[in-house]
Image (cartoon, rainbow, N blue to C red):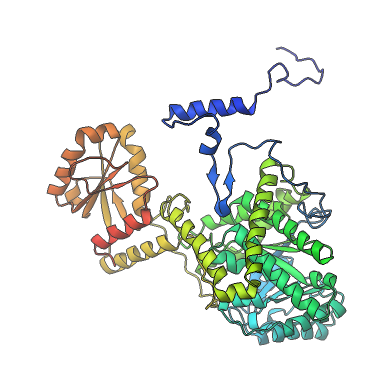
Length: 601
């Protein structure tokens, strides 16, 4: 055994440093071998990934990828966190959401890891009159309460303050947020008659008598749930925050008092780096607004795992999505994090799903020690560059809203809705082509899964911006298949004709099986076409075998009764083949047309 000298030298010291140009040249050589003719300079662009807001994620970042100085944690521009200590003192605030008047569920959460409560009251939740019952047995001086009451914010706030007084909670011990958000309510419902006068009164009350309570929430979820990008979510939250500052200072509060009344709510998605960058960029942007206004610029953030990413089919996968999103929220520096239960899209969560939700944060904080490091993503060339680019995109959208007269005017003119709809339309095309895969839905669906049934949740407010989900196009297809199964006892079927040995057909057979199951069409791979119960078929093999046998097998299938024959592969000139399915094809259009031909309504 050779013993290396302990002289502090790196094992790579004898090797010369590779240059960026050398790396580009090697990458270009690999791409050329795969059939892509690119120059050395274009090699990096060929491997880049296009994101929303016109951003691109490159395959390699280095110290030459400049970004503004992020500062220190707890200091302007607050990119690295609103508090110098980050979340190291016990982790983030685990905040559970409740929409039903279930005191048992509330107490179970608080006894098992939840630190604060987010209560939906009024439309989309339980009655204001039930607030005292829901909070029965809760130590209100220990557990902060955050309200979401829409238009009923004033009576809900008054009831909560009455409960504090009745139970002897000192005014300086009350913690939480009264949840006033007139513009968020308007975005949800289209109701523009909810004035800011009562909100300003609540803010003054909190500023003067309840130092631990905030009065307003700047909720960016309505824009995220309407299909908005991360930059649009940032721009809308910034414009809303500025609108509230104007209202509060106009009502007599100082800028510092007004800023202290705001808490910002953002969506955390399974795109971990985008979420981390979004939260960091949000603090930087708000610091700039506060600087111009002459106030401290720290932004208090509440992150919520994205409802848009939650699937209704195979909902167990949502646990994995929520875990990644929660990790990103914690790393991004959110002070409070809500993990939506994995059955959130199906109705009211049960005790098991609430337990999994709260334990997701507990594992990340207590077992993974995620909160022991302040700003763990700080210094990453990719994260710092992405934070800067996202901040620029958010600021541009904010400026467009301000040019339109502010958030209220932009909502009422339709500007915000049109911009979000355009973003969602572009994203829907990627989802339809499976360029953005949804595991368990558009990729690796499981037709035999048992459905998960839940009690219906209160209907959320509607009438304003739409609520979208990534799975919605595929959910409509699967619903058609379910109806056919209920009526006939079988699902619509397609026969997959595998040509040649397994090495030749396995890849495309797997691809076709996944694609058709995403639309609720059951693939049949055994036996003869005549015995399959299918009316259509799909050839699966290699290009070489297609050249030899595609025409012959297609003719045989059609003579056996196949009304339509697909070929899994790039479009070519194969006699008798009616259509082609391939990576990047519009899967939703293909599946919808197939169900139409099969008579599945």
